[in-house]
Length: 408
Image 1 (spheres, rainbow, N blue to C red):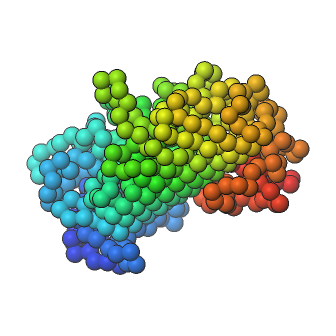
Image 2 (image 1 turned 135 degrees about the vertical axis):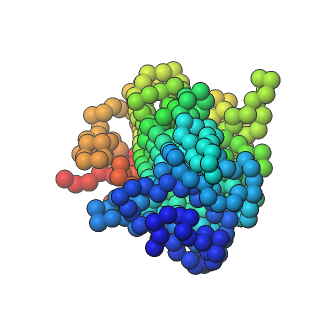
Image 3 (image 1 turned 180 degrees about the vertical axis):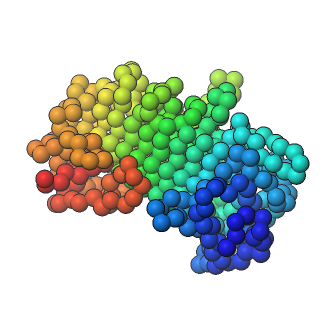
């Protein structure tokens, strides 16, 4: 057991080692660099040990001390936990920690001097590590909550049961994101994403294969989910299902989900995911009126297939120059539904609020047992405001939307 990180020999960690970081009255005020690796069967685990009231150990970047060797000069100011600097940090798990204040208005100490964090400094910055899993963490007030490199530096990224909010550029001069991921394969599930500090996305992703499921997503000032290209990859598919998605308090860009690309030079679009977005059993609520649709498919070689979704608040469902099709969705009255088969329209009279689930189907609702069963995979859970796995209790068929009707 240690009271300061510098008391521990981090470079001596081996596959299968577990480092317990105990909750204490004051935060840990040190930045951490890991350049050691576990294995698939024996990862290295950084595990926070909460106190008796469940409060997580806190690592605070404001005034934190940098005490370790770093090989790449550009990594000194890039994160509170930096993975894979001198050597790769493969098969790392980070659990039960609160990470905060690695942003460009905070300072850290190195020797007798103080330095600024980069505007894109992250709570967790993965430079070189093939497999990273983050569970039950609270990450906030950083430039980026989590930021990763792309393949071959990063193969697999997993994020679950975490709260991520209030990240961004703290001078508000540019963007920041709650998470910005570029792995070969990404899985994001059972999380709560909240309000941003500056303009940016809740989830920005350039991964080769992306799965985003069972999350509560609200608060990005620009698209809540931004799925764009990485030129290292070819076809980039994404599976987004079982999520609750809505606007936050501040909105700069009313688009809600973007699928395609974002590289533009000399007014020419460059790069595309060139893949398919499978978007099903989500509940998407727009709180503002706009002519734009919920979904922006902005590359001609991209396609989106929508099934069993609830999309309320806009008459236009999608726009862009890609392809969109689907079936068994529920839209607002008078919505443009010509691209979709066997879909229905209605309003808030079809729903009832039940605890943390404000858009559960009401008794007799058009949503009950009317969803398509022809899905890429089974929908087994519902999203929760408190990050946890809540089983989706269903009968013979499946309801439309992220939530299932329960007999009350």
